[in-house]
Image (tube, rainbow, N blue to C red; front, side):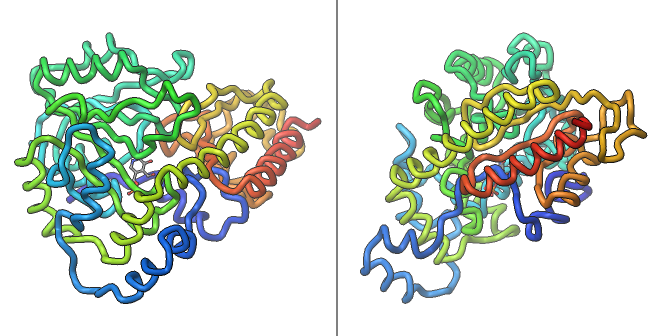
Length: 390
Ligand SMILES: Cc1ncc(COP(=O)(O)O)c(C=O)c1O
């Protein structure tokens, strides 16, 4: 398989595990095994310690599937396929549902596997660009222009990374109607489901609305449990689900028993975990708002409505300041160059917009501990001030 390098991951591989202030990640605050076991009580700890470490069931542990299914209005546990993170869900669906030459329309910017896997399968991917001046909201007229007779799939992500935008109820409905009218699959990446800052933005999952819509979820983002590597596909079509299961025989076969057990515990306490992570994110968002206000001459943004990320734009007066950017005077500094200097000078990690194909922007992640976030922003603020030569 020939597949494009995953730009975001290639950036993170250089810095993620040795930087002091990572203020770019898209997950909620990390949850520990001890926290989960404490929530579940002493009997659960006993059970966890005596879990067998043999293979588990390919479609997922029945208890876990039941917990996941309960988040959908009209899906039963056998309409859930558990996967190794949303990453595997995306990989299986694209490989199964697409043929070379099919048209796939994917929002842009978007998490790269949502279009690169389709390209690797041989699909013709059309990018459906979101724009800052539209509040990063998709334009349905533009989608209608992109749809052609070979359109097999439309891919959306809401709440959206990196921009933090959220689809409106009307747009979600319109997408489902278009999927039914044209007969394409609506792939709805909902890994940030439940992470919204106004309850009215909490949309029902796409899979609840139509047989043509498939929802993808995970334990990584809302619960800070990326290391469990648990995600899922939720769909009405049992044929698609059993084909995903058969393809999974060749990828990861199954999850690990400890991961499934802890994911089940987390879902049994999901309100508590979500409330905790939303409280943290709200506090960080207020700190970020003050930071954006302070630097409004050179930074622009659309305040996120959901998820744990924002995507500010950078509009520098390029006179070089004291950080040696003079050579770039008159040009927009490449976002990778900016982020590289920030991480090397201040030990603060942002994600360059170029990893999403958008220059002049950065992804900021505000899901983690407020202390780390605040210090990271203070250091970034000092960097910007020196950059401006103030
Ligand atoms: C929108 C989106 N989908 C899917 C994923 C994959 O996540 P995981 O495999 O940890 O579930 C990510 C990770 O950053 C993401 O941002």
